[in-house]
Image (cartoon, rainbow, N blue to C red; front, side):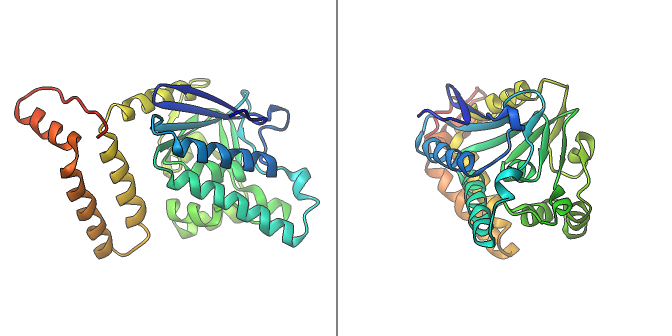
Length: 260
């Protein structure tokens, strides 16, 4: 599929998706969000792709935020529909049956930080800056920022970040758990690809069951979460990969996983 504002590169079991509006620092407008949704739906159907890497085109920005020029014309109804669109797209990223990595190569403000938080992992360039600066426009996050941020860093820190609108550097992003690691300037996509290659070598049904157990477990109490884990654990014993992994361990050889 051809896209106007996305560049998609597929390499075996990994796909790299670049948001490409470098003239406006890859800002998200309605058209970009709809393209992202189509891309995610397409990738979800592509069983050969196991890891999606999202990054920004150019050297300055991952996604600098939502498109302010478009937002300035919104009525309250328009704003609600825009918020619901962004939330739906990022929910699909969070729930897709793939592993998702944000390669944060530059500015990730507002919708860019919300995009990053919807991914399973984020790697961040040492010079990148992130934040939720909507308060400086008289607004609050609209693509899930108030909800995901509080779940990652806690209620009080999330409130502080949102109502001050301050910028967060790479070191603090890692210390807060918003990013997994800081990378050398210009190397974040390379590091994300290395991580993706490590993930695709693992038994992928088990990878997805791990993701499912954690995501669903965080939405319920501990007892229900333990039930979810036990169910997913038991289902894996019917897979070829689990049989291969156990046999390989007993016979002291390297397993050959097939994703079945």
